[in-house]
Length: 527
Image (cartoon, rainbow, N blue to C red; front, side):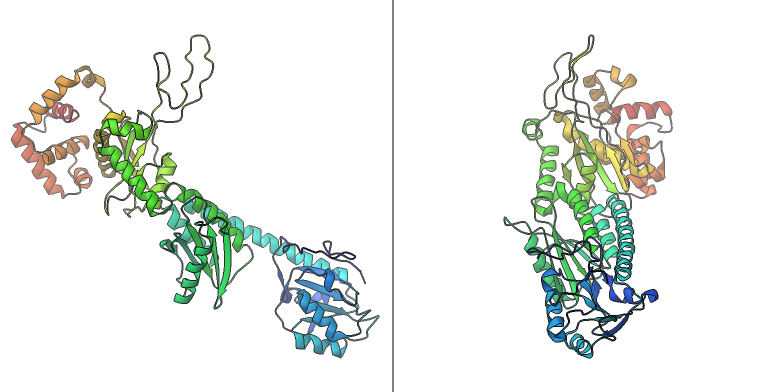
């Protein structure tokens, strides 16, 4: 018989601090018994057991050298008191005992069988033709196969969660995918236990209450709070993980069973949710950001400049989900993160667009200038003559979103840029474009002094009310399309026809004439 078949086992020294379980999934005893070539037979004790290690020992009391979860293999060389021997194995946490017959014992002692049945330790009969090393090798092979299955499962889950995180509603999508991967309930809770998002089958009320209490244990409201915690309630496995950041968000999970790799999959979700929720963790942070955006878009330039810390250029973006679903604070915050800003307003009410304020793009640090070139201006400074001004940020389309953006504008014109972004969003929705950017006045129109152009526009458009002027502007921007204008304005196409007809009457002009349309478009661009 081999004396040592577990590489991490100790044959001569006691480990004072038992290590954690091996980095491999436990092997069900039934899988080992199913290997017919081993000839193993369970003759006592329960059928269910999980094997973590294999260890061979002929000591009268191997307790000091067991870590727990072992399949202990022995030929009973020093077996004198089976009841005491089995008791010590159970006390050490051994998973099962494999007893080899011959040459010491012709059969498994009856007293050993009775002791294992009485104390609930699975007892296996090892035939003479099966060396202990063969059993150990079979266990390691089963562990390698289980580890491979676990890695494949974790890899698939990681890909699915990453795909969910790229959706326009990343937080609910990640929770839904996590619940599907674990076959349970996934909930995002605040530090006070309020549900932010949830997915999966709801547990019974008692288990749900226990899950909320467990979440409070890891909520980072107090120094020294653990980062994770687990519990079991009535057969439901509960776990809670604190998200990164300072707002106390917690990922709470409730599953009917706990499989190998679940903790790793949950850890992946924790990382993704921490990144997604970071800009707007909790209702308080979302409210502060929304209030700041509203103040910036309606305040005077003197009040805005100190808050922004930069004079611009700034871009205002209006956004709506492509599928028409409302966007909550976390989803809107994820959009802001993808655009590179935390200035997001998603709390104007149902049906309203998300507003985003995008600052200047990243600037390179100042570097030494070559002959004939100008050194790059460091971020946060004002461009001087001969130096580079901050580059405006360039918004790009986002999957699942329809965006309308203003042209880059100085801090003194944010309110006007807000209105331009709203028009751009309406145009994008009408034309089914993922992004429309309002173009600044250029070309021949830029040759007319702004004051004269504005005066001419006011005089020409004076007969029109604001709703009529908005309808005319939208209609002209969409090349006279009744249907697209109706979509952009959210009205019936007949309403558009009536308004455009009224515009023609009040202006005394033929709106089918290209010269008339061109002059009106020039005037409308000045307002």
